[in-house]
Amino acid sequence: MARRVSLPHADDLFRPTADKPLDKGDEAEPNDAAANGASAGTSNGRRRSSGRVRHDEKMTVYITSEELLDLEHARLSLRRTHGLAVDRGRLVREAVSLVLADLEANGDDSALVQRLRHG
Image (tube, rainbow, N blue to C red; front, side):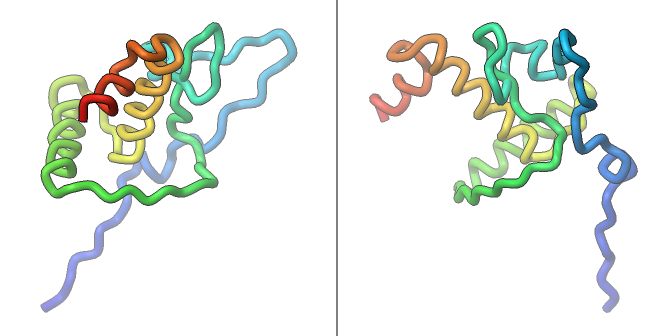
């Protein structure tokens, strides 16, 4: 039986992999995450995820099958309801950025600290 090969989508092949260089005095244009207040670096006290750029570092995280299904449901919901086609990696990077921004802004009152304390 022949196996079908999974090919990348056109938007994955032709996506930008790096930000354009900025001239002196220019401010970085916010991406989708910046508009929502999340970022990889901080600018004006806000954190943004790295978004759709080439990532040099890799981290493996093990999750339960239920957590993976929840992640897939969220990804499909973003696509169906909001028209946002994102992969799981982008979704996780955005979520991490949001949690880190909340921790930075709220410290002991952040959702992360509360969840880690109470289990």
